[in-house]
Length: 401
Image (cartoon, rainbow, N blue to C red; front, side):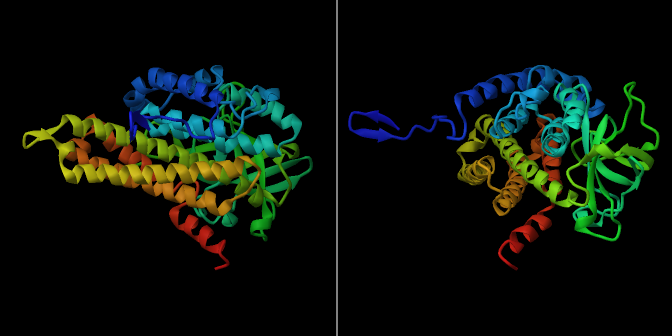
């Protein structure tokens, strides 16, 4: 509040930080946001045609942005979970959803299971090089015949002496065409459903960058959005994986991957919130400059109300995400709230994207103004890391239904 003698007036320009974040978090936000704006944003259009380069991941690793939440023993910074939220929010300034997705797979999807479930030898083998960005990771869950029904996967891992032999295929794999290794969800007991799933770290390329025997990139997939991010269909034919590459316990992979999805979904929610804020800012700038009937269109009540609705939804989603992140970071396992945060944020982001296109009118439909690209990119959030329908089912079941 701003005071003038006896009158208190609201200060709409105040930017007080949320209680979750310390001075250290805000220092990271300042430095990483500047780096993203200076070194990633200028290439947003180029990478739509060429894919984001591996070198930008290595650059982020050199700056310490990939290992924020990983132990110092493996080259990380040893920070808390909130650093993941700050990173996701900073990446929204890249202007490119595909590169943000590629980074998130590395830092928040593939590496956490290795850090939590892997042996010390596995951690030392995979984490340091991935944290520096010298090796790229992928997560392999979805198959041509099984997506939301994780228990229905058919990629088989059969024990053979001191190794497992893997056969099967995966699809919609982000980073799949370039990954050095993949955290792979397999079936070690074909007769079981949830209790027959096991996780492995599988090398996809050797030290020279050549595909390992039996690993094939069947095809790269063309998508509606996220064009700068490679998405692949992979096949595994008699791929031998050392038994020590197992993550966690045999047959417990469904429960392990369910834990991984919780952190992933919260980071996805934070990314959605930040992405919506960037679209809101761009549209706000436009309506202050665009004139119709002799005045800026932002002065029309219909437009003001649109911004009032968008601002309310964004703020509600941020607070739900932050409150849930606090519980998650403090050792709770609030699956219902995490699921609700992901569902609400991904829907909100799509609604804001649609409204921003409408506010910009014909220009919103043109590539030049880039809202068009964001509109296409954000739609994936209602599918990836758990489709809306799965999220609703999870929430409903927590009430005993």
